[in-house]
Length: 117
Image 1 (cartoon, rainbow, N blue to C red):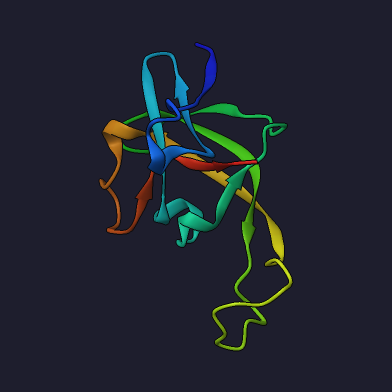
Image 2 (image 1 turned 135 degrees about the vertical axis):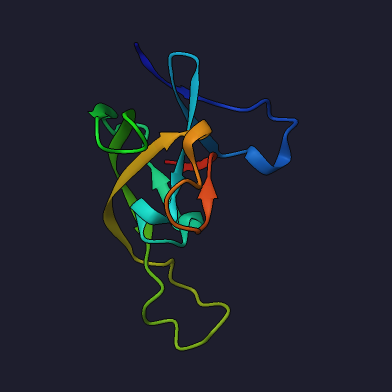
């Protein structure tokens, strides 16, 4: 099955500048369990290569997606709300699971719409 990036209609304000992942008819999501939390800081570059992986021992056997993205760092903000320099980013490996299978391991945050880069 092919992997696709999905973009929302621009009338959906909350999803502007974001992308979702699909493989065949399935929508995918990222979970805190696999992606170290603070999922709102993750960006998936348009140039990122997305790969599918069959994981027999995960949730009874599912196909996960992985890609190299970036994550904004929160270091060096010294408790300030604003500054003139943008946040630093660091490379981050992303792992996505089928949406139907989320929240079946550890409690934590989940995100379908990732920042598009």
